[in-house]
Image (tube, one colour):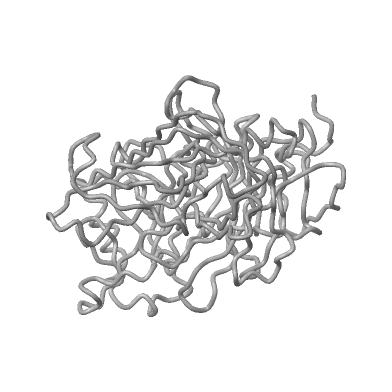
Length: 437
């Protein structure tokens, strides 16, 4: 039963001018997040583990496209060199101690003998372990953040400890250079009680809810306005609350089109506008919202005329590099006011929401042929439909797993480096959701 005269339609018409007082009788969790400047960066956060004085920050992926939470155990091995499934190959490396967690060094840890195995990216990455650990996790603000008081330290958080990985990756026989690999992943997708190996746990968000650390199964992510130079972007993630200062215009509910057996959040494909020309995607697909993916993938059928129309509409600003989109110039030369605009249909008939993502946010420092050709490679590709870290940099994404609600707003408006604004928070109590703002 509703306990407020404000319904969802009321919320969806609110702007950032709306503010509500901080409720002291309900809990929420704020986690600072980043989109690092690098070709393969995703949405990440920096974590220290337990009570050890030598605990060092580890950068882990905050992944809405997966469900499980894990970190490397001391002495873990990463194997590669074979293109075949489950074949470890001839190459391996030991994960450095600076990116591992040793529960024996923490007085607040508790371990259990529980096995885990997680598969990512079409079986191209498999991680395995045989321990779970419960310990205190401290989420650190970005070094550039102006508000460092909101850093969260949360006791008794459960993570799987992985001791090996197989990367399905060919090698020329030299085993050099070593491949990049994740330092840890915290899955943020909805908790679905099931025996599926894709959702075996630990579930970071569900465990917080079960322990009453948060009173609503809501999550809101945002990024701040980009800095004047191409560099790391800062943002935040709120569990159990919403910060109305982090978006402009209305928060609009969109259709949640996830199907049975899918992991994550799926939305209908949007129309895409660039350089004043709107394109209607022709690929028959839905779109995954995946903060753990480095790029956005546009739903243009590869063999149709639409990819050519997209590049032609750019007036020579964009070039096709085997499906990867490049900017015809240096990364620094991309105009600050040049956006990709995504127009999504709303849950309510007649409503739409436009998300502007600055093209500069897709530039993460990769230049074609070392820059000799003057082409900046973007974290943007044609085919399929996934909205990864670049999309998150321009959008506020709000979800309520209890009710299957998914909503979007225009982000990228708050001050670079800022944390959660206490004066603009609405903290949800038991049974409350976005319609109570």
